[in-house]
Amino acid sequence: MQLSDIKKIAVIGAGTMGSGIAQACAAAGFQVTMRDIEQRFVDGGFRRIREPLQKRVERGKMAQAEVDGILSKIHGVVPLKEAVDGAQLVIEAVFEKMEIKKELYTELDRICPPSVVFASNTSSLSITEMATATKRADRVVGMHFFNPAPVMKLVEVIRGSETADDTVRLIQEVCMKLGKEAVEVKESPGFVVNRLLVPMMNEAFNLLQEGVASPEDIDKAMKLGTNMPMGPFELADYTGLDIGLDVMEVLFRETGDPKFRPSTLLRKYVRAGRLGRKSGRGVYNYTGT
Ligand code: 3HC
Image 1 (cartoon, protein in one colour):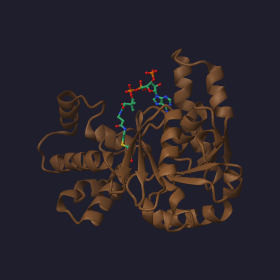
Image 2: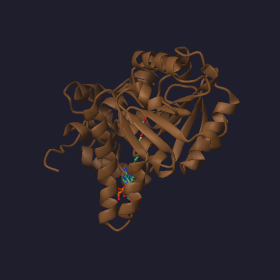
Image 3: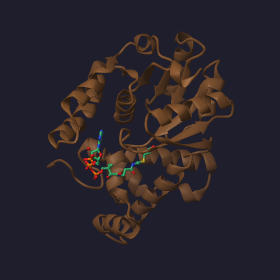
């Protein structure tokens, strides 16, 4: 399949990443379906797309017609079959649980023509294992976007054990059309960015637990000392503490290396429901904002 054959992209999952990916695809001119298992999740996806774009309009950074154009290209759906009907590329951004993903891939494989390419936005799970749920392992690939997906320039393109060169090339071309820079990564837990970034965030929780500095000062140190746009706790709250913990669990489980042991404080916060901005409280409190 060529880039020019891709007219419609089905994004499965309308959460933070799914909705951001749908927005990026629509802004690049693709027809998009954004699917989730319940209408309220689809509505939530549209809200996540609409609000920041509306702010851009208010600040004079974007014309209302441009926002309307993006939204008109995204069709929200619940039935999976309707979502993938006529799509040449499926981008999956569902829960980071291998069993859920494999069930989905088995179903997608059953209902999509064999030429359709499946790209997973997983942040750390094995593409090779997901591909075993299909009969098209050569057309299963990782396409790892970063939050916020419409803004962040990078996509890690992950080659599973059986991913074909043509599939990797096609996805790299899609990334280019989305205005993203692709880096090719061989399958490995956490790929490149999360293998480096998430242990740094995890270590910030260890520092906090040891009482080495306050959360504000740890964030300030990293922002002013390394020019990060957000400190590790601001970023953890932004991306979700549960997401970070999931990545650490995968790194630790897959490598057995103690350097990837999840911080007990991070674990405790997640158990307490302190998931970050989305739950109103993470390291910081957002209930008044
Ligand atoms: N859609 C469109 N535009 C958006 C947007 C969205 N959803 N969200 C933000 N923007 C635009 C804003 O309109 C603004 O545009 P402008 O410069 O033309 O006005 C621009 O992006 C910057 O946004 P803001 O002015 O609101 O805020 P900041 O300048 O503080 O930037 C940020 C916000 C881009 C989030 C910045 O703080 C940042 O880069 N943070 C780090 C993000 C990061 O590291 N992400 C990776 C996380 S790890 C990950 O995702 C992997 C996963 O697997 C865990």
